Image (cartoon, rainbow, N blue to C red; front, side, top):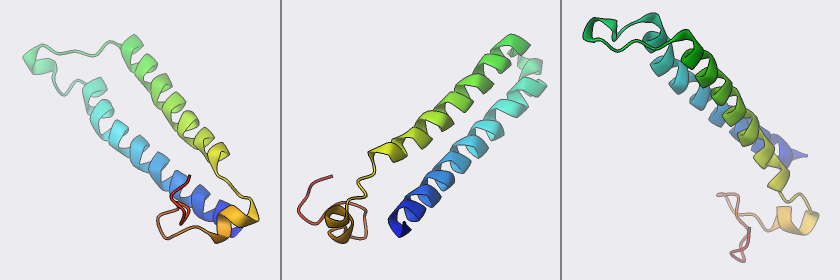
Length: 88
């Protein structure tokens, strides 16, 4: 359970970083920051990009399914989350 909790927390931080970075770039673009130089993001493109962001976060969360929680795999893990023998 501890290994799953750690992996979930890492995944939450990854998803938060992705969402924050995406929004730092896309929200000003959607608000018209580059409109003075002729670059305007249509509302439909903004909606599609927001959906893509949601899909990326959901797919990243699905990677937790690859986590090997068998007792022999968990006890052999090093600090980096890989097994000592060099496996997954």
